[in-house]
Image 1 (cartoon, rainbow, N blue to C red):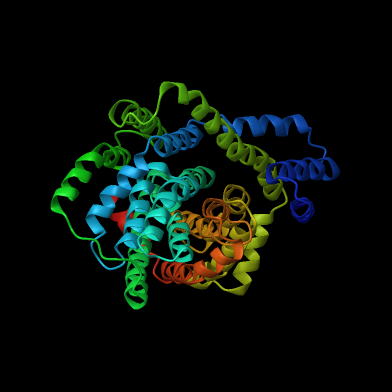
Image 2: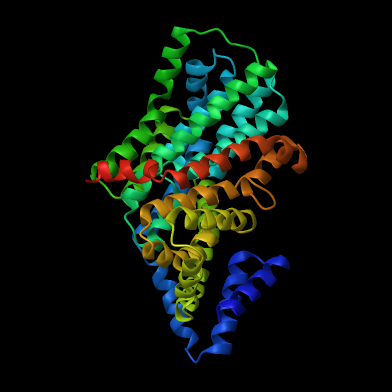
Length: 425
């Protein structure tokens, strides 16, 4: 059954049928051919999978990200980061990374990051003497930080699917996200110094003070969200609701960059994006049930166990698998399909499930910026007018750095697990 489902699904993907529709049709065909289970039970199961308080966080974080984009929050963040770091060699490149880190703490979406902070930073870098290809590659690659650093939409979804603590998973994303950002900044400094990219801006304490004061309402967003979630004052779903209300208030009354008449269009955009994500989640439910019914997770666990029982070797195998999956499949769909299959294997060999979820999301986030179907990659093409191949070529060094960073997390899982154990002890 599982092989038939996967074959049908991949065949429809090749034909260009949308992922959610391909997954739903494949599941229905397989259930009809191989079982006597009434299909109405599957429809009930699909509905109940979305009838979840946790999943309410997804549309709320999407709405919050759109409000930030439309409300000029990204611009305020970039201007503050520029005043703080723009005076150093490669300063605007590091401003791009730093801005993505801050924006990641608010939006939870890599696409929102590349479309907002990315657009601003690419324009600023090219005006300051950076090659367009380099600026685009940097903004593109750093956008993946928004999927790693909390509040991450994919982290919430993955933790929900795996039935592990969302708070622990979100917290566990902080260290790897910051570490990757630091590596990016160091490499950017090296490249800019070697090639003499950009001009060094003059530091101004007055400008820094002014931009910091202007950015305070925006900077309070991640502080409120992370502080509230990690202290236990509110759940991730409640945090998403607070993020929407706070961002809406800041955009309407503080920055005054959004008008009331714009809200219906913003809500419609939110519904469309949410529908895309949750439609995949709904149609993935029967597929996951088929895998379970067919015993696929146990078969995978046995197959990997026959190769090795060493956790690091198992994670290296899974790492290579995730990279391939992320290159060809939507990250949300991959989470719903892959998690139920691999989680029993992870638990069997004693790998921390929180670590596994975080590593899976980071690796699939890598797929957002890599060819052939990286959604952030296509967003960068649309923004800059560069050819697809030009952006990919310019991004290769950054992709290699990211791949090496992921290997570090395989070899040293303590970078993810130890801080979580300390904080939640």
